[in-house]
Length: 282
Image 1: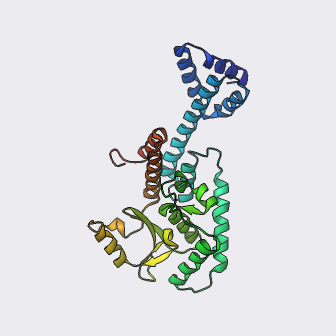
Image 2: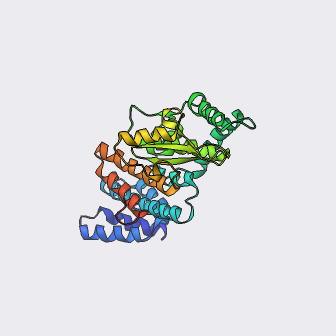
Image 3: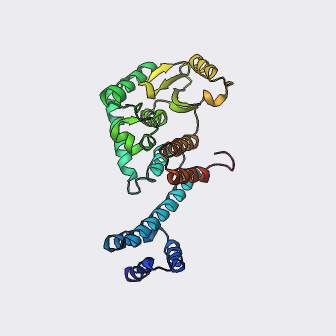
C-alpha cells in the first residue's frame, strides 16, 4: 500500500462510527509488519489523540505478532542459539533492539574473561577466573533490591545495569563460558537457577552466578531439595535445554508483570509462553 492510500485509511480511525473503525483496523492489520514504518510516520503527523492512540495499538499488535512468529521460529530452527532467544524476548519491550548489539556486548565480556584465562587451568581455577572478571571487575550482581522487576528478565537491561536475577545472570555466565570452550550449562532448580560444570575430565560441580559464582556440590543440591520437601529428580542436577531456559525466563517475566499489576503485559507474555509450549504445560 502506498503512503497516500494508508493516510486516507488512517484518517478514518478518527471516525465516530465504531464499525468503520473496526473495519479500518482489520484492514490495516491484514497488511502485516511491513506497514509498521508507515504507521509510525502517520502517528507523527497526526494531531488527533484518538487517532494516535489507535495507531499505537495497531503498531503494538503488529509487533507482538512479529514477536510470536520470531519466538516460534527460534524454537523450531534456532534453539541452539540461546542469546538469540533472549534477544527475541527483549524485543517485547524494545522492538528496535538489534541482535548485533547484544552479540557485541557478550563478545566484549568474553574478551575480558579470555585475557584472564591461562593454559592448562584446572576447572575450578577457570571458574574462579571467570568469577573474578564478571563479579569483581565488571561488577555483575544479583538485583536483590528489585528482585521481581521485569528488567531482570531482559538481557539488554541486565547487560547495561549489571544487575539481574538468577536465570539472567546464569545465562550470561554460560554464554561467556561456552564461548571460551568451558562446558558450563544451565540447571533448572526449583525456585532457583544455577549452572553446572559438566565434562568427563572432572567430577561434575555447580556454580551459583546469583551469589557471585560460589561453587558447590551435588550434596548441596540434595540438601536444598530436602529443605523444599521435594523428591530428587534428574532435571535438578543435569543441564537443561535452551528451550526450557527461555520458557523459564518467560514465566519470570509474566510473574514480574503480575507483581506490578500489569495484567495486559502479564497475559501477553503468557501468550508467548503458550506459543512454544505443549498444551497444558505452561
